[in-house]
Length: 387
Image 1 (cartoon, rainbow, N blue to C red):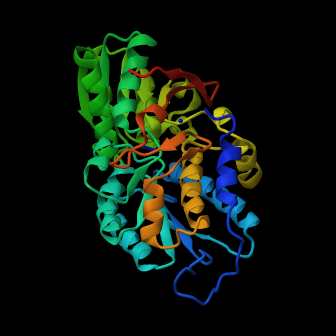
Image 2 (tube, one colour):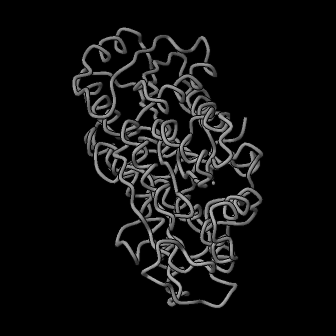
Image 3 (cartoon, helix red, strand yellow):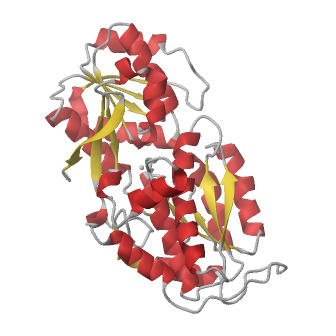
């Protein structure tokens, strides 16, 4: 993603930047455009809020809501509002949603798109319109290679996560035979390709399935995995299919450890697989455990939403705060906000942010963690060393 990265002072630093600055002002709610001081402006969240991948999108949207809640409490007379753009994770819906945001002159920036496939569909429109977008979770590497001047990513791409997953398979699981499956999405296939490239001859077979809730019976793939003798299975895709694959592998007597990426790093994976089948699964993510996020982020998130932060809640919070800092500093046109983000450096709750020329997170800021399913919960296993 995708889909969930030193930060002891991250929350304090980002709050000071986001909330400090010019005196608050009242917005003119009857205006069709944001005022010159940012009052009445909007930021949008672009991602799945319903549909098969909604859990990941909701995690992120809640992170954005927390950023807005903090900002607006400190700027009660000069509000910034959130526009939710529910893509359902479907690239076919992405262009129309992108145009909706572009046509609203009050929208100055986008947190998202959340997924790689919808990014490929929406980002050209954002680039043409000069509307800055900061994704917390779209991890396909080539998104940064399309010449989109409005594209920024606050998370490591699959060139870091794929080799990290392969490292874990080789060095922690000690697997000599690995079977690789992907869901044919821009995200899943790209991540699986990186794993295959890194593992080389240890990959004893591969298969493709359908994502987006289009397939429920994976018996043909399960038979191939069982025949291969693999002791580890890597899945590139999202939690819905990952859970069903794990469930059906277990039912067929396959004990190989399932390893999947950030798109499956959600409690919904355990629900789909069943706790017993999911036990021992490894889920990687270029995102931090909530306990390692900076400042009071974890406590503040739980106080607002009543649940712990999920995968990419923290990076979405940071992405929103980068946009809010720009607005607070007086960058209240799309052109000015884009230039602000382009030159941005600063500490967030999830990383110390600096962007490369093509919008990627600077490599020195990227961290990848492995998480393990234990006792029906996803818990941190270890940080994976950089290759």
